[in-house]
Amino acid sequence: MNIESLGRLLILGGLGLVVIGGLFLLFGRLGLPLGRLPGDFRFQIGQGTCLIPLASSIILSLVLTLLLNILIRFFNR
Image 1: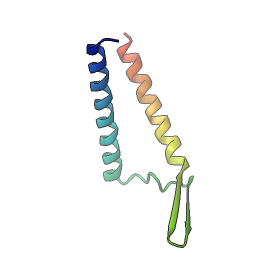
Image 2: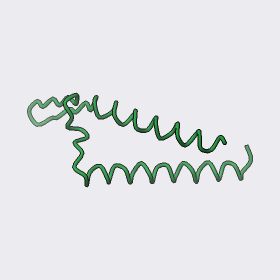
Image 3: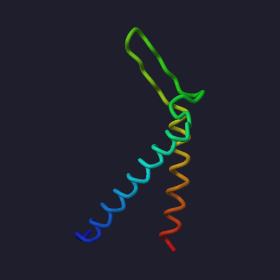
Image 4: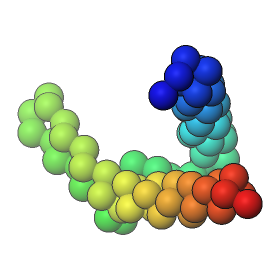
């Protein structure tokens, strides 16, 4: 791997993080209940809280898998 391909990889990784961050901001403004879905578990003992976002994680995994598959098919033409 030469320095030029490493630079491209870092730029694409940074752009990917920007897109993912933008999606999280968009989800927050649209009022999507990520972290509060019926499959997300919340345990509260005294002043401590433990959140296990199982359903939210599955949904995000499916969405990101679809996006990555679309991108991979687009760039492999």
